[in-house]
Length: 186
Image (cartoon, rainbow, N blue to C red; front, side):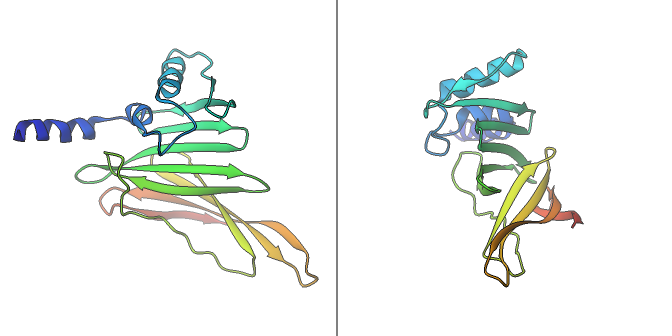
């Protein structure tokens, strides 16, 4: 029994993003079936067009696949990123779902290796005279997130306008088990 538990724990640690992408529970990513995800992986690994028809009758495709990072274009205005972030004893799964209207806006969720929600949360504070701030998170490599903000601001005359905010790169620190600021740009 103990050996079986140890084997299961080491098997979970051995998963790469390809295996994690295929194993996503339908409750977490309902747009794509497990067969869709397996087809996308097989097609991209064979350097073929990997576009599939998703459950919403739209087209989805896998745009990037490495050992630790997957980027999925769910539709013209929706994307999902999946990244395996190492920790000293295991790893966290970071899943970013972004939607574009006038600006991109992202929802970041973290999961344990068994796809249960992790207690880790990522939040960046915003300041200024704004109505609403949109944040777009985009992995630029396996451990670095580029965070871009856009603000809906109210002018003195009462007009609402969308303004580009700032861009910050944050890098995953395995030992501290958190993202830390890398560089900032205005």
